[in-house]
Every structure is written in C-alpha cells, then in structure tokens.
Length: 74
Image (cartoon, rainbow, N blue to C red; front, side):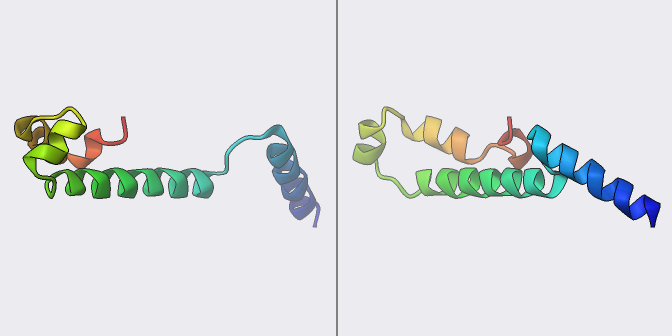
C-alpha cells in the first residue's frame, strides 16, 4: 500500500509544480500537427488573388503545403 501512496504524492507534486503530463503533451502536439496539416492543405485550394492577399505566390504556397509532416512540428 505504501507504493500507491508514494505514487499519489509524486503525482500531486508534479501537478502542483505545473509540469506537463506526457499524455496531455502528446495531445497538444497532435492537435498542433492536425491544425498545421489542415491549414497547409487549405493553401492548395486558394486562387491567385487569395494568395496575393496573404502575400504568397503559388510556388510558395505549394512549397509550404507539401512540406514533410515531421517538419511541421518545428
């Protein structure tokens, strides 16, 4: 029983210290990746005038939209 109490105390200390929990961090990074993927996918749907409004050329939009997913988390 002592181990369970020690685990509880350790979790409470971690929660109080503001340290991120691994699953929450994973969820946060997954949401970030999903948002970036969908945003970049949307770039491919914009026409030339819409791209000009945001200051991008078609080539820049295509290059950004086709970046490898592992580079999106940087």
